[in-house]
Amino acid sequence: MTNEIDLSRFCISTVVLNDDLYGNYTKKFMPKGVNLEVIDGKKKGYYGAFPLMDQIENPKWDYMLLCDEDCFIVNDDNCMKFIENCISCGTTVSGIRDGGLYTTRISNPAMPNNCFIFLNTKKIRELWSRKEVEASLFKYLQTGKFNYTNMAYYISTCKGLYLPYRYSFYPQESEPYYAIYMNIIDTYSHWHHDVIEFNLICKNIQDDKWTNLITNREFYSNSNIAYHTWYARDWQGEHHKRIYDIIKKAAIEKGIEI
Image 1 (cartoon, helix red, strand yellow):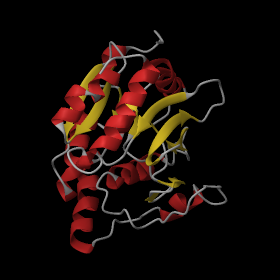
Image 2 (image 1 turned 60 degrees about the vertical axis):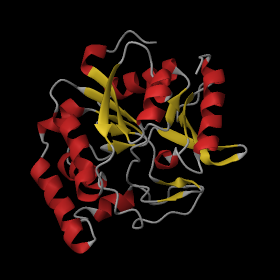
Image 3 (image 1 turned 90 degrees about the vertical axis):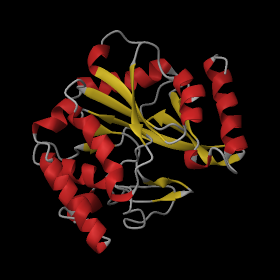
Image 4 (image 1 turned 135 degrees about the horizontal axis):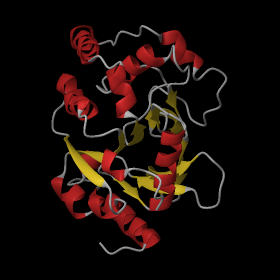
């Protein structure tokens, strides 16, 4: 693992809905020596974004990696290289697109997905407006639509871009964290046009139509970072065996016992 990051100012934060999944499995895949934070995943709808906003506003952290409870890091070095690159380049937000990369997700490709995403919280807080984010969320609650004040930018980020699967800008508007990232774009785009960067990509894996392998966009040998199974909310239901099979596969790849 790299020694160039001040780990005292960095944390990996996870939205937790299933204490069993996170406590007995997900935590075992986290890089050693890194601070871990938990976000209450039981809050839904309008209030679903509040715990994440609390984390962003916490002055204890300068940098944060959001990593879902159904995301299992298999290569600590590649994970930390991604973080180090984001910090050294002054990146504000970086992750994977929320649509167009995998068959099961047709969301807005100009927005990031929370499953695995870097946040420069120190930089975000400089012009952060929780009041504006909450106003956008409240408007959604009333009208069913977010206030797309900068839709031209969102569209331009995808114009002419090849994505392997179909997507829509609209079906996942119910994702409450969209309001956070739209506020970041509106606030910071005059500084840096590509304020949200997509330096990670997802690959489908064989024999599992849901799980994706998150990799670094840079081309170097063995750029794998993590498996993301999706459907953590169904850990106790029909997806349990499938997710557990991926956990076992990831454990073998990382060389740990579960």
